Image (cartoon, rainbow, N blue to C red; front, top):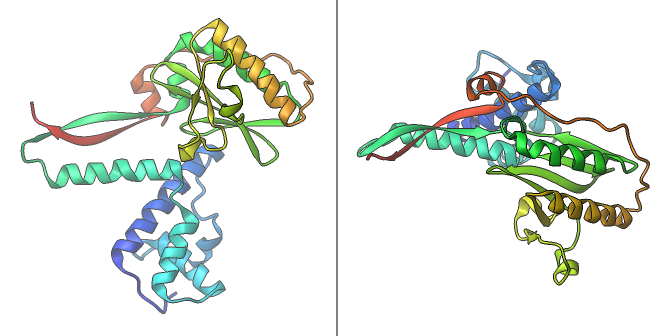
Length: 264
């Protein structure tokens, strides 16, 4: 199958990387290899360079023919990069640059740690996490999803809360307006200026039982805002046994990458 057009190799390479990462992340979540299952796979010629990128372009061109430069830009926009993919691309670019110029520098290995790995290696926050997760899921209609970096809670399409771990601290982000709580008893940070947290701008650091109880009070107010009934749920222990870096790397929960730093 021929393209009928040609695209700059650097653009094809960029699109291929984005699709590869998205496909890998989706396969991890699905628990199986999703290669060959995308709609554009019908247009794939595996012997080509950048086969997924070319296949995605063919599919889009067949549906809405355009100038090829517009085609590549539109397809890159459609397939990514999202926040998670963008971070992986950034790290891959860092590795490539490290290999290109090592004068006066040395290579060091760093680790991109998933949200789950941070929970696994920090038993002290698991009680806070378990109680708050049960509390949120006790409201009708709330669904959760854990990605590499976060755990998100939604009601329908509305994002209402998000967990992550910063350093060794469990952080909870809520879809409450920080301006309404400026002079109250709650300690929080307004992170509305950050795109990642724009929908959940109230950041709470859960460092003690008192902070956890305050978080529960705010979750109750959040439920009132979204008119969610507290239906309760069977209490689940969301705890994980400790695992080493090597074990978590083998499971894909920690991802090593290489960067060049100034030699000591």
